[in-house]
Image 1 (tube, rainbow, N blue to C red):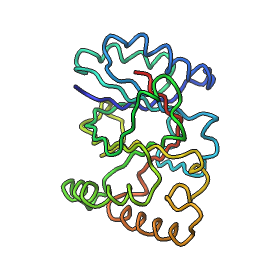
Image 2: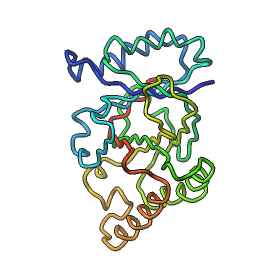
Image 3: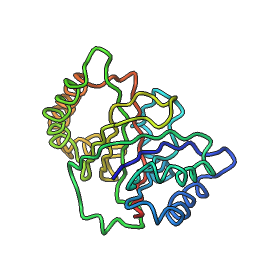
Length: 230
């Protein structure tokens, strides 16, 4: 089984609704025989309030990210070219998935997941080796991310390989879902609603950990609407 993360930049002559309809409704039908899981994360009007969270070292940010699972990319690669019909640029990654916080996804099938989903693409600082990077991420930062944030879905994806030569050298891709209010309210984002002291504490702990393994000059943070289709 292989999980694929696909960054998509829509064609200029396609509007937002048409793009969403293509990804959420048309593509799943054409791929139904080869995918066991299909999720669309799209930048739309429902996440406008989260614009302050956007970070992009490689602007413009993608208009959507699709996550899907196939038995073998070798047998599915031709069919996955379907995304080129609506996108002017496609960058893809094979990833290894680790589900840190899960929910009953049956309630999310074929509709927008509550709140919003923040997708983060990370690169490793040049001065840090891979072992040290993953050791900090898994044995130190993960628990901090759980304790200091209001995330209710948290998936870590380790990038196994890029599928296009021109892709940035991302080491990991994070999927996190937050309550709607966290789009614009730092207290809600950092699990400190109504408590400014706790906000300052959680933010300080979180940033101190991030600074130890994240290159903020090479990062993508994209607030999205999440649609789990298959």
